[in-house]
Amino acid sequence: EDKVVQSPLSLVVHEGDTVTLNCSYEVTNFRSLLWYKQEKKAPTFLFMLTSSGIEKKSGRLSSILDKKELFSILNITATQTGDSAVYLCAVVSNTGNQFYFGTGTSLTVIP
Amino acid sequence: DGGITQSPKYLFRKEGQNVTLSCEQNLNHDAMYWYRQDPGQGLRLIYYSQIVNDFQKGDIAEGYSVSREKKESFPLTVTSAQKNPTAFYLCASSKTSAYNEQFFGPGTRLTVL
Image (tube, rainbow over the protein chains, first blue to last red):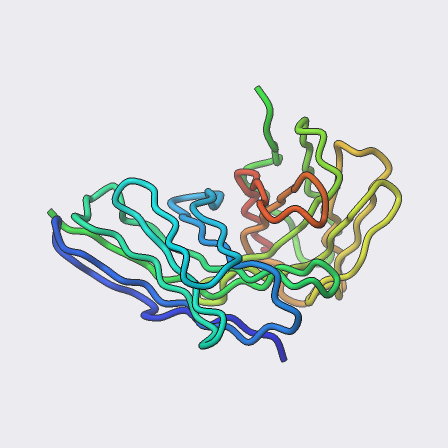
């Protein structure tokens, strides 16, 4: 059965800390892995990863994929209260163009 | 402005009634998706449509129905057969079904009383 597992389920940190969110997957016929940030309503796109070992970076956020070990990490450095959100990982399969979402990691950044 | 709209934002219905959730996009995207989000369970795919007049069941299609008569619109009907319909429903679209990035609407929170 195809699945995406994120850890930890929730995380509370202080402003300025660095966090690492994990996403592991077992998905047949992998095409890509995506990270989303969901604050109150709709998820917003962060990164798309298709190749192993190539870091994607946007400001304080970065992400990398390991297709051999079947996982990805999302790093956030110098966290701010505005980073508080649920971070969703999704894996896209070539089979039926299906998206498989993890349960998300809830990040709370306290001042 | 281009984007995806969902209406209404909040919806209350009595048990046993069918209800239709609206999803419209003006991004000229071919593919559209409906997800359900419950606490602690992430997003689960209900139905998706790769092109007009075509749609496929996702993981949890039972108790739901969709139509795709126009490219811009992908309404979801929650029928009385859906045993636990109270949830947050998200609609998304992508340029094509082979294009990875999905754009999400703001969501509709359905509460069945």
